[in-house]
Length: 496
Image (cartoon, rainbow, N blue to C red; front, side, top):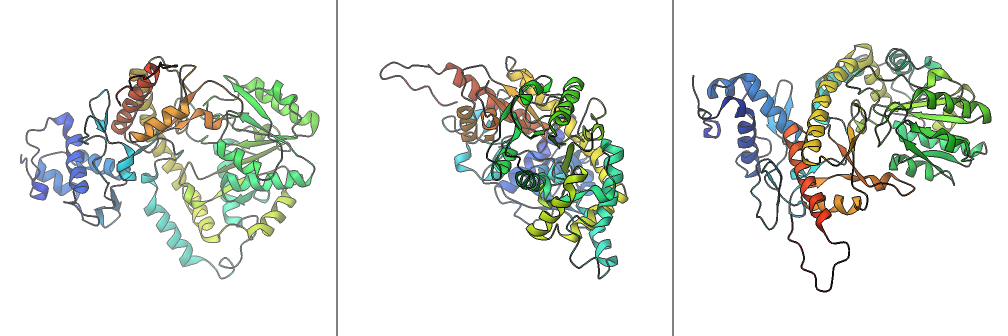
């Protein structure tokens, strides 16, 4: 068995078997950071490098995958792996920070502060994204080429503002078998993501005299911003361990409500059966509308996903979802299944806004659905995301044992509650200064409440997640020890 390679003069002969992946990834990462491997440089094929090092091919493939997850290399079918980006400094796992500038995690891995590093060296746990490095590029490209090769002149013209029939047909079948949604193709409206659906609904509701849409509190800040562009009132409704408090909803005076029942954002709770019944009873009693944002519902890791609310009352629920959490938000493709009486005005408004969504991406997605590509992709992503959720939950419980971790085993994020009296915005700012981005729970609140941090884990390997949680643990510990009312001329505590 050989133990060395001419490539970077790598010698793995003395590396223990269980540490080979981490060692190889670190050596390649360093070579990219110091310019030894410039952007565009091609890496050896995994099979070749494995033979030269005497490693298994799976070990080399996993090291490459970790670097791809970090955005440092890119793998293309038929072209191998090449360097895609160079970080401004060594990433967390191998950084060499000055004690006065960096912060060391409980595992001993120092992390550079964000102020002097490139974005690639930052661990971003604030963005609610899936593992975009695993986007099925080859499958999308094949489907897009097939569409271009077979699309008729009619299909390349202006598409229907409601969406192309091919995609609506595939979505009707997909939503029926995966989420239980009652939707024939003629009932589906293609939108620019969930945000596009909310904008359409808000304008149609406003034109019909509805001036208030109730929102979950805490709830997605982005949804609140979108609806606030069109409606004067957004009364908050608290969320507890059973989901939206429907008793408070009944007193809100709202004509509609936006909910995330399958996996509430950001608390991670599931709307209980009793609350579902109460929600639909509220809608029926006042001719109200339930807007169901089926947020990351496809990702449930301990059991089958909870079915949508819409099939229980299709004429009082407007169901919306998108590919932002299953494929990529950059596609800007979503869908809306409204009650029948709202469909015509929604389609008219869609036409008046921008004539509808681009045709080619719709036809490409329709082909991926027809060929089962999306389902296979989701199965692979569930496995990967579940491993990353397990890793971040384990790290949080190990390093922050007194900070509860909320949320069912689902989705792309967890919620970490902080002790009362902590300032989650300040903690998030201090973590950012040390290279870790998290979102404070207070950003998603309307009324005051317990502080916390929303941690999105899907885009990072478990080792990077452990390093990031170590940073959070030190930052939170320092925050706890800061005096609430310092005396005159206090001694400033040293940085973490």
